[in-house]
Amino acid sequence: MDYQSSKIIKTKTKKEGFNGIEKNPIICVLDNLKEPHNITGIIELCRVFSIEKIYLCGVSAKIGINLKEKFHKLGIARWESVVFKNTTREAIEEIRQLDYEIYAVKNTEYSAPYYDIVSPEKIAFILGNENKGISSDILNLCHKAIHIPIYDKDSHINIPHKASIIISNTILKIKKC
Image (cartoon, rainbow, N blue to C red; front, top):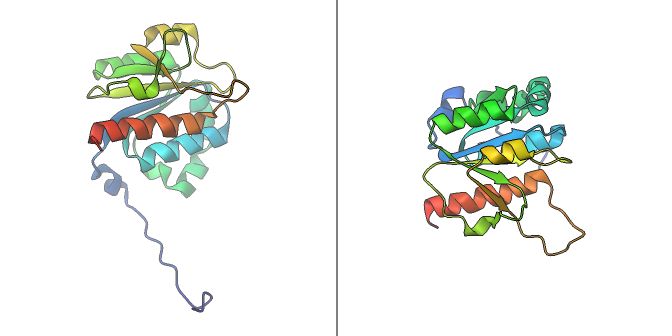
């Protein structure tokens, strides 16, 4: 096949196209993430998995606003489910009003492995800052805490990988695959 003469057809999804897709009842909250590649990676993941909303809070919101040009290139700008909040507390208060069960993704002495959760009808995940994690104030606002077991004590999982594991597992449970 002559690749130089072949045409690549790109289709662009219109704004209303995203609204027509059935959304999964999952909300993802980015609590003061600072790395642009982590923020855009998680937003793209959430769009691909068609989750209900993603909240960018604190520093994440400021970085997200500055990344709007990149959002356009990725098609994220047309996806209306990105919400900017000054604080994670504001986001949690809004999510509580929507009757979501809120889970902190943090390894604590009381957290359960992610695969043990029984997915409620509507679930929200809080993902904390790359270095500081989730503060105890925010942790106290959550219904439960979950973690991803890590068997090599000298290793860690970056935030987008955590999000992909947690969200894909939750969708499998919602869809009962």
